[in-house]
Length: 145
Image (cartoon, rainbow, N blue to C red):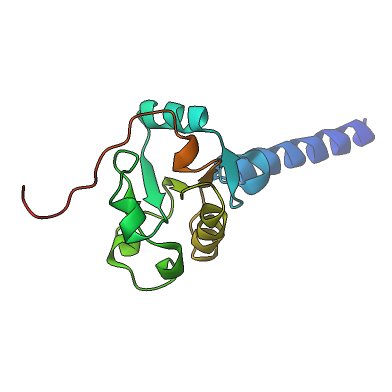
């Protein structure tokens, strides 16, 4: 009887630790993932449409950015992503962040840089904007027109 009581207590303690440990978010439980996740264009389109907060970062050069962007993207060129970019300061490190470039190479570097800066939910768009099947738009020039 005593043995059963000890086993029950241990089982209850382990269960409590598992529930408490994952309730606040942990990497192993999938609540917070601090690794880069590669995603397809279709997955990003679903993320855009799901109503949950999402930030989109274009790590191409300013000249490339000016040719067309995924709606809502902010431009932080990959070589400036660790600097004091005003756009970087405006991002929320806990919000899902999709990173893209032209073809998918620079976005890997940009994604890793964001993770090293404390971002916790970073997604790399495979194929970059070249593989984007959705509409693109010209960025706001900031000129009031």
